[in-house]
Image (cartoon, rainbow, N blue to C red):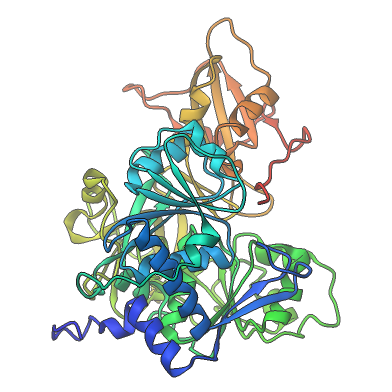
Amino acid sequence: MTGHSDPRVPARETCVLRPVLDDLAARRPDDVFAVFEAGKAGEVGKAGEAGEAWSFAALKQRVVRLAAGLADLGVAQGDTVAVWLPNGRECLLAFFAINYLGAVYVPFNTAYRGRILEHVVANAGARVIIAHGGLVERLAEVALADLTTLVRLGSGPEVTGLITNDFAMVAASTAPLPPLARPIEPWDIQSIIYTSGTTGPSKGVLSSYLHMFTNAGPETWPMVTGADRFLVTMPMFHIGGMGLCFVMLVRGGSIAMMENFSTDTFWPFVRASGATSMFLIGVMATFLLKQPPAEDDRAHKVRLAFMVPLTEEAEAFRARFGIEIFTIFNMTEISSPIVSEANPTRRGTCGRPRPGVEVRLVDDNDCEVAVGEVGEMIVRTDRPWGMNSGYNRNPEATARAWRNGWFHTGDAFRRDAEGYFYFVDRVKDAIRRRGENISSFEVESDIMAHPAVREAAAVAVASELGEDEVMAIVALVPGSSLDPAELIAFLAARMPHFMVPRYIRQMEALPKTPTSKVLKHQLRQEGITTDTWDREAAGIRLRRERL
């Protein structure tokens, strides 16, 4: 036990990965924890079919072997370990093995390259990186900071400055597992998840085991139980992917993992895997509803789904597929402070505050706004370590976000007289596209690297599918000209595909305040003008690279 008497902080055996996995492997060795998708990440079979399944005992055996192999490479309790893998068996195994050592899981978005990759490599402070062979060549293009050791999954190039090890060899280690220097505590850092910067580079969110447990665990999401098998479609470099894996483990439940969402294989895998609960983010529900109705629309075991955001299509989805709908508001830094009841009827709501959190809507001076008025949502929990522990190596951003003892979400909401909250807009200049948070600052930085561009602004504009599309407004160096398609090609080589703007607008000069700040609100309001170029209309579509 942890030795404290605070009832708000559960024992290690409840919320720390190592003792939880040890207990489940001993008590329920043959029960299945994870079902993987066939045809992906080395699985035999067709995509959409259920592939390999791991029991708790098999999971622990694999975890201990990889943990021992990583320890042989010098990974110790408290170290950060970078992981750059797509969803699949190896990524889940890496996550759990790192935590089993008491080390910190630091996943990178598989779309990262160039400047943003160099930033997270430096910020993570990791000496060891576990990376897919198809991504490794990107490391040769950036400064390696503290990295010395590469654990490569599959074939790929060597990187000057890194000692390369084969993942399969490391994962098959028979070396003895070294003892922990001390017990892993609920307040120890479990992961660093990178979330989009708004006025600066992306920030690494420090999450303790207790934060992740509180984020979507049995107390916060009581509608999900240990009898459920949660479908994981979001990537393991997002809290929506790795967090679900962890909170289903601590429930004693199970997961069904897809490499990524696909309308063609979604329902076949849901049926084959026996999934009972799932998350529908962004346009996923829209895509599924647009498929032709079929006789087997209700031939599945799914009983509930979280729909974020809650749209007008919620009732149609529930009626067609026979699934209860919930919604929430959450972000990497917090722990689901707003949760709805089943099948909410107030369209656009995120729900009401759950037990254990306080939520306020405030103005620029942290003074509470009246019911019905718009204010920034700020949050705090009554549980110590129930939210993030700050931003990695970024005390300034931590202080800004946590001022006055409350975490400032940067999102604008309104609240009705019954206590329901409604998302209004982003206070900060983040853009959300296809489930990805995008930093306008980072988009602008890479646009400005083009020699013909004098100044640039990136803003969100409405998409016909919901969420946002990225629009770039540029002013050129005097005497220069720029084909928008050329700019897209330039950016596609420098940034993740989801960050590349869809729309390009050229202006002689960007509108500014008297203090020379770009008037982004004016550009957002003007939106897609008649002189705006659309790369999709031009036939240029960018997709995630298949590994």
